[in-house]
Length: 341
Image 1 (cartoon, rainbow, N blue to C red):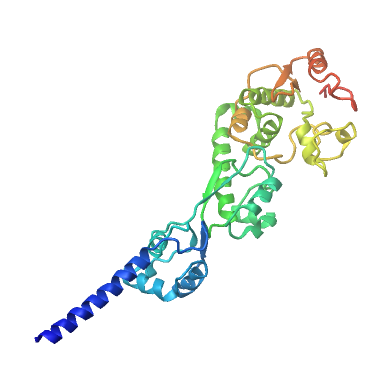
Image 2: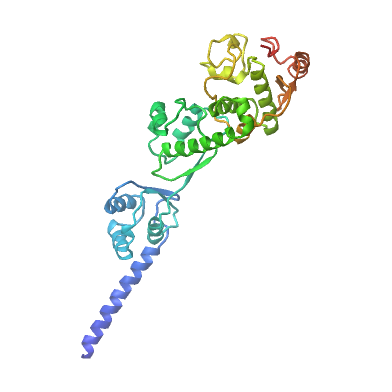
């Protein structure tokens, strides 16, 4: 080969090497995204072309052809997975595509809080970011059928915990996980010998736990509340527990009046004996445990100390004294609650 041809090949090689170097630098260049924490959604069955067109809308100086060329040679175009992917303004084309190729989906968490009602849970789920198919939350009958609930009412059927999800996970997926955990926990507690002496079935245990949850958040206090609840049921006394009345009111205000206590509702335990027909909230672990393990006591009364715990009493005289001590001058609209049957 003569020298001119050699020089031409050498020049062409340098030219392509220079182009390749620039291309590699370009692929690794940061700050391609217009703003920090840019999120891109890849939908189910979305084509790679659709993804690249969507992606470049959020970038600087990037055209679809650049992403397509790199992805073709790296085979990342074969690993497109539905999800939400978030990037910083320091990400490059390569780091972006590697995150997608490795299924680096953005993960969110949602916490169900002890004592939430179903209504409160739905309200927060509606606001959860990147959660799919939230419309089903308004159709309780559909959810009940899908979850195959033996009790159709959804109140109290979901275990308070933190659940992790990633787009395109659905609201129903979280409900399924939460219900499965609650079902497992309640059934396990009801299988314990002492629980059978207190409740007719596991659903009654769940109802009792929901009342205990609303009465107290303190684990030890909850066990004494549970003892009052089962003691009153054993003696065929009305439970006379305020949270059940509040749940049955159309306007669920927290300060009950004498008139509220006369409100005709299946949840009014001042009018009706026994447990209400359904739970009144989602009980947490300590309330569930307390319902199955009430303290062995003779207490049938209690009054709030206004510090998150209660004063418990065996007799009406003790209860009256406790009311005078802890509620004196705090109730002006109604006389002290004697909680008798």
